[in-house]
Length: 263
Image (cartoon, rainbow, N blue to C red):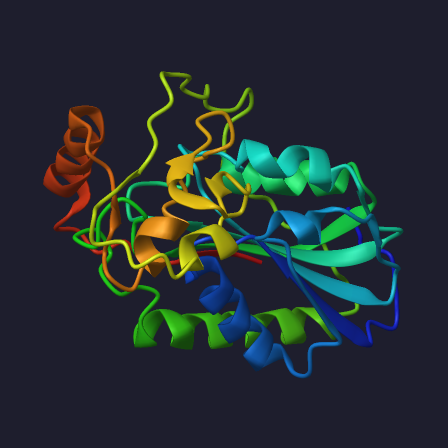
């Protein structure tokens, strides 16, 4: 399907990034594209309150982490508040070296139904939220170069008079989401009560008056608190999480997955 024409004079980014990897990828892509007119960091709950409306002159770069092969459930209600009005869109999913499964296709389909036109899409790799032994310190320098090159391809495509929507890999129906008993991080006595964990929690699950207290119903195991704690006081103390970590390391720890681009 041919994309509708527009002047395309505004670049806008919108991303959810509890541990910072998705943000870094989006920053690298936007750096290659040029000046960003507006940045929406929707990681914190307070930034997911108001509706957002884009128009046909906008190029919107969406970025989300992959949770169990899908778009995070937490974002689905907020995404209903976003309208495209013919905006061109680039979709980016960031995963921890296992697989992005159906997340990219799901992300595109959500916004295709919200008035966006898919210009390009990509899956990048970021250090896994559960363990640094999987995709350690990624995105790295090579990933950043690929992101900048991806931006160049996007710019080249924009100037093409015969723009066509891109087809993204994935399956429908989407991969089934696993539902199990909620497991939350625990807090060691080494906690210095700095409040960084609560300030950065995407769901306000951590009590500002008691950093040891975490709401099971709100926690999404994004690991923001674990990654950001300056004294490593937050951690998982559950054999089920350890089993998942060991499975991931044993099966996906050696191979270096590379970004996949659809344009």
